[in-house]
Image (tube, rainbow, N blue to C red; front, top):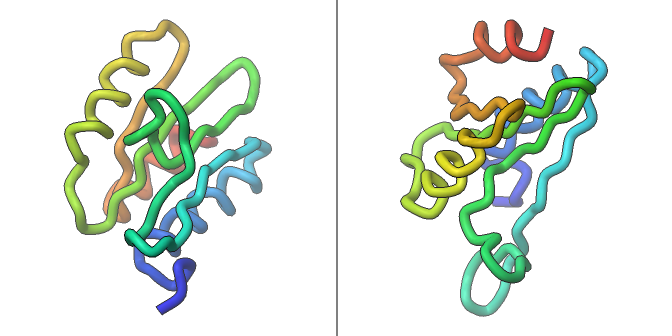
Length: 106
């Protein structure tokens, strides 16, 4: 199964497609397969960084995208920390949150 056919990746692609339609810029740091399994090449404290960074001034939205797996402790730590920064909106989105996604990105 290729990386882009996983349910979470498909959902994330849908979120980014909608964001683009609404004028947002999006960034995602994709993991790659290695001999030790999937790895995201990050340095310093990047482990667990949220899936999406969406920007449409004056707003900055950070989102963790989930279909099945729960948020990990490292992901939760990043989300909590970013949520303390004034002006940054932080979300955990699942497919059932689509009405909220449309509202937030409208």
